[in-house]
Image (cartoon, rainbow, N blue to C red; front, side, top):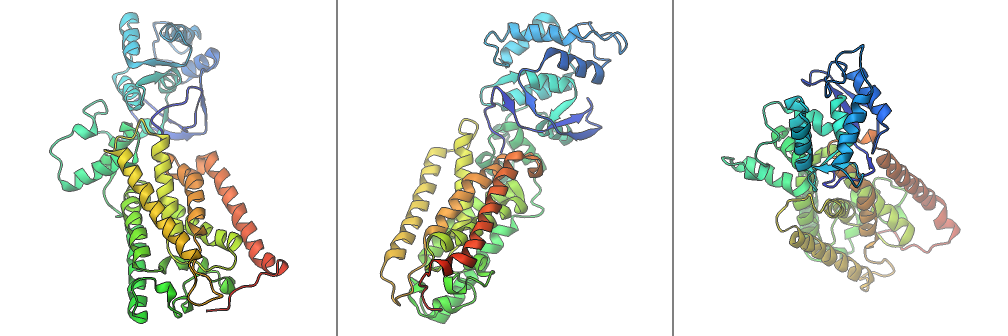
Length: 437
């Protein structure tokens, strides 16, 4: 979710207001822009924090001098000759020491914790202003609410005396989150209630259906070559595209044990940790959108082919996770991340190559072709758009994110266009469909 490096112009995190002790919290709709006009900053700080004595320029609420924050801005600029809006934590400490500014210890702790969570270890002027005017990001809010832990203590990786379950949670935090402050929050707040049930339930159902058809067809490899394979109520078939449930239920059918094995491995190794961090709702949204996009993409781009397998949903999760790792490369602390990323790409390539080979392999029962591979591409498209937004915004509510709604609207438009295509295009194009199974 949140990135390790921060853009020097705009920060898209929503702000959260709280008092110094964290007793009152409310969500604010705002966008933090760097740098802010000094008069706007001074007005907000003096109005919101009249009792705070900034270099003794603002002794009380009535006599508040708006030059207070202009003075702070000039001092900040002295340590920021490039006018980037950032200074290093070392320079920030020097500034406080030289000019004798007395900050609330809790505020200083949270500000330095945020700086330590950045990949570059810098403090943003706007973050300081937000903190002093009681505007805080969700990371600040959660740092206040968690209470018992010191943010500026040892990093999560250095903590000792953890049992097996705590080590697993810590490992998952480093696998999926790019900022130390978020990893600590997740480690403190995760209770395994509810457990990651969604991906496990889907996987168990897929295995159960596969075992049922394996016993029924007496075939474990390349089940798709059996004439009874597509006769069930689950696979998507172009002749049965009016049966809407098939656009989702096809994930429980697999072409063989090799197909199921690769999908199940990626689904469990990537999907379960992601669900533990982001929850069943977010991961379920990405998974279902990938599944639906996969079958609809086949109905548009490969109109005569059936679809089986959970690759649409699996590829949506894996591609979203890999893209999130790449986008936050400097902040991701998972071990052997380059090797692990290469292995994930190899598994995806092998599974996709198998699907392409099977699609163009001579079908055992012409004119019905083998299952399509286009569902994989639909899942990747969802993962690189909607999925990245969902995983990137670990600490923010999705309904507050404009980019989420942009991608969601684009996805909805694609679904509507694909539905109209299925209703009208087959007849207008006079597509010759294979016979019903």
